[in-house]
Picture (cartoon, rainbow, N blue to C red):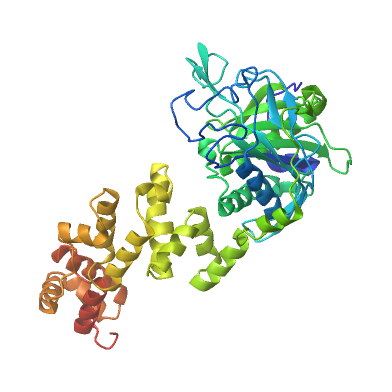
Length: 504
């Protein structure tokens, strides 16, 4: 066991050790029913209302395989460039835990549905790393324990625990990488980029909602380090159920620094599971990690083997969507976005929304301005996603049209967006109700310009002397005089025409 809880500087750790990663991602499928019974799978139902004798493991209850779950597993395997097994079967993974009512998990062991694949992931610096996939296998999710009375939500310090079996039996695909070596200092970034790329791929396949914050996609990060030049991998730890991309990166970075501190102090790494603490940014010890032999796997006697025909596999291959990375490059070219602009769009989770907004008639620049600009800013400030506000691509396209038509300026458009978010109606309805419309009377605007120039002669003199940037202060005063209902560009034209006609 480690003899220190200290960490060393990350760069110092990487100077002495090479990291090796192994990522296990569990994905809940979005099938209507569970993997081996007909119970519903909806998230957020009242505890223990979506259960039956099969998923509760009652004596005499027999499971039946969910066909849609098998099809989803094959499609995932194909999208990950895996080979698909001609014949495979389920196994029982035996262990006792309160959230396992049967005392075993129906999974796959030595005969997975998909194996030997890869996924190329692109880092933010433009470099690409190939993550090799060991296997993607089918299994069922466990129930959910709720520890009540403690300060951390964990069993330590809790007064009592409750178990909700609604999640027990929901179809899961576990995707396991081969050891990731040669990543060096980029190891945390590679881990984050892989999980992000996998999330995008699964979303494109429409097999899961991949909402990490709800647990429908969870990452277990295996981390070990070995001295520079060594060939034998170090002892690994497994940080369980990391549920955000940022946390994947932070957890890997922390474990590398922590393990380096342990080894530097003369200690040894315990093979164990560890818990990630988002608030403090550290991992803590969970339980000693079991090896496969400890689970006493044996073939599931109540389920027939799965033997997909080549024709069926080929049919499912035809349903695969355009790979997300390839699609992003195509859209970026069509929209004329820079690499930085496209990265902002991706980070905002707005690629699909912008595509739909452009299809609804908005300009690519206008769509990006709202989804990865204004709405992304609000989402970050409120801890939401851009799709949480009830704003649709049709709304944004309509608002962009009102601005392009000259009815609204940017300030008015933001007020209209406030109204749309507040549920006041479509952009046009909000603008009508709030009386938002640019003044089209040129004589009224010119009168306001003359008044502002007369009241701000020192600034006007600067503009006459060629300091055109000073016109910005006058434009602001004109907008104030017009109560925000003037066209700022037209106001600038009038100001320059009066004070610096040669420049205008």
